[in-house]
Image (cartoon, rainbow, N blue to C red; front, side, top):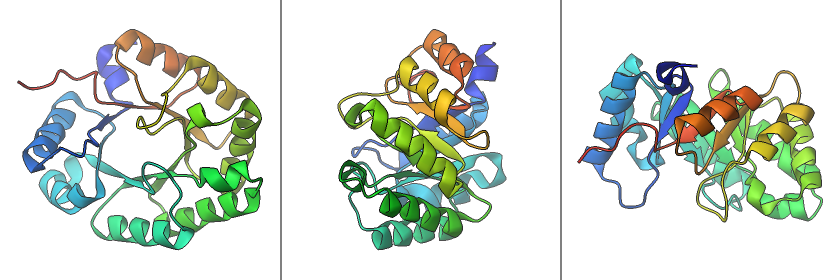
Length: 214
């Protein structure tokens, strides 16, 4: 797989609390130049970024980020606001507290609520694998499938670990055929990116495959 082919599956990401508009603008310019799948940016920059890129690049943002313990109503408001501002894709963090408590119905309902809000826009579900047992990851594969989201995603990149090859393999073995996989967090080389794709990922979240500007 060529570097260009790999980059076409990358959500070029900048979620730093220190980012300012010139950083987001540079991210957008690089994403367009390198042909990435999207830019993934904080919600506060979505409107300006979409006005800047227009139809040249998809704009992705995050919901319930990074901890996921917002109420469903708060996440829904965030999603609706992001969509109104021009977001093409949403990456939501699940309610990990509810999953740990065995309240799968709440987790699934929340995902379905945001998928309904997205309509034809893409919803990716971040389950934060580094905080889950394998049993909980498998349950999340089932819940994401039943909720009919578009992607299951490994990580926020803001917790104790990121994407692993074993987690992508586990997703591929248990998620429904209609659900795609996004690996994110710590992907720093084209070699690793290619392996994640070979194991079943369709998207990669990373800030490290395109050279940083001085």
